[in-house]
Image (cartoon, rainbow, N blue to C red; front, side, top):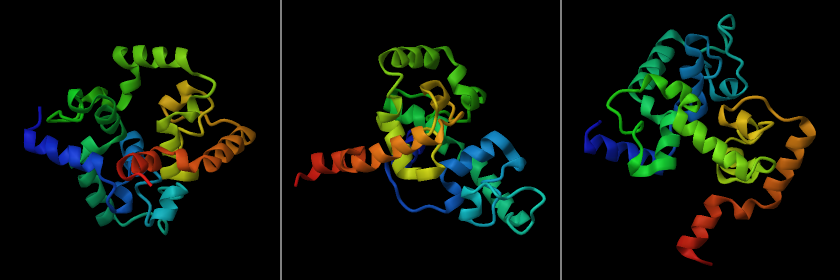
Length: 199
């Protein structure tokens, strides 16, 4: 386990939405952990090229400098606990979570969906709601925070959403986007604002 002071720093980071360097955002970190040096998002020279995943290893104009990539890689290695898996562990389990409080990154963290505990939770959740899985908080947040770059809200099924893969067809996505935009004020961000401050 990491020291209590380190856990406090991590909890504060998870709880805040302060401005960060663009390549420290989760989508870019995820690309690093998943693809390493072949990643096209985290290696981009600028944010827009990263969002569009245009930084192919052959396209030097859109790829960051060797110095920049080394800085980012060092950051990712030191801040592994800011990844999707650890963030999910914190959001799901809070102080009872184990992965976000670990002293070093767990090797299984990159394939968390294969763990028995998560498979059981997923299957229980799946029984409760499969058709409208995209109406739940994590998917709404994904749409609001990441827009078109979000992968979870676009997934064809709840199973695909759990690993951010296999997008739904364009008509389905248009229907979801319309629903999200029509009910923007019901989003968790605004609901918690109302709970805290009222009118």
